[in-house]
Amino acid sequence: MKQLFTNQYFKVFVIVLSLLVSTVMVLKISGRNWLAPSQTLKIWYGEANGAETSQHLLDPYSFTHFLHGVVICWFLLLIARNIKTQWGLVCAIALESIWEVVENSEAVIQHYREATFALGYYGDSIINSLSDIVLCSTGFLVASKIGFKKSLALFVLVEIFLILWIKDSLVINIIMLIYPVQSIKTWQMAI
Image (cartoon, rainbow, N blue to C red):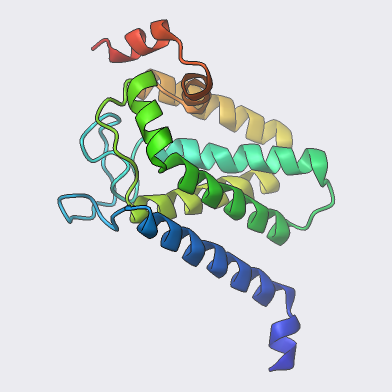
């Protein structure tokens, strides 16, 4: 039994589980619901700006959370080149968990409503936040496996795909969150 608690993978498991439980607790305390207001759970909800976006397991913005993991991998390559993959994964999960809490704060939700075309956005369900963390983890693992050049190509392809499909992407989302550009918002709202 002692060997189990000294095993690094068991330590990683305990830390990841602790991060997920803590994130769920903070989201629940801050008023997030487990499911969509309709009390349904869909595997896929395909409307980028629909009433139940960010309420189900997957939606068009799930791709941006995958890209979070890719970017976190790049960041870790810069600051901690020799970090083991499992500890990099812990960092990715920790950073994405923090983002999920920040993203679902009333201040950020209100900012999204004012600055972007997400006029009806009211935050993520807890299930969606957990799915976003899993997708970030997946993006991290894929990027760590295929390396910087291939993950950069993947990043660009996903960004272009999202821009053509939903008129939004991770880069556009960051721009609109930090420094909203009216012409981007107008372009996004044009049907």
